[in-house]
Amino acid sequence: MNILQIKSGKVEIRKDNGTLIRTIGNGDAISADFNSDQSMVAITIVKGKVEIRKENGTLIRTIGNGDATNARWYGSDIALTTNKGKTDLRKENGTLIRTL
Image 1 (tube, rainbow, N blue to C red):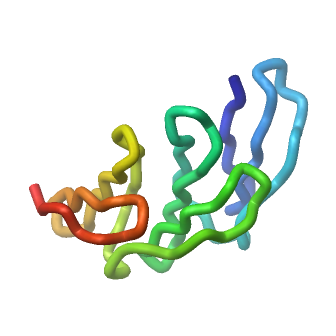
Image 2: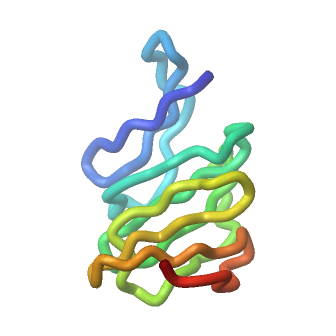
């Protein structure tokens, strides 16, 4: 099991013993979360968007309306908490399922 740590806006993927595996992102991350099998990472960036990246750091896509404050995986879907206090449930491809 790997651990995500944010240092200076970069997301570090570390082994559970603390060894650095790799650093991903553009240096503007505020939160990050692995999916259930740790093959992808949802990174919330300062601009309010969420980047979906492979564990090797490759950008898959950017989702959201620019108002996200946090993103968490729920199965294969992603819950984005917005600065308005609402939660957008989105598919992995970014399609809005519903707003809670």
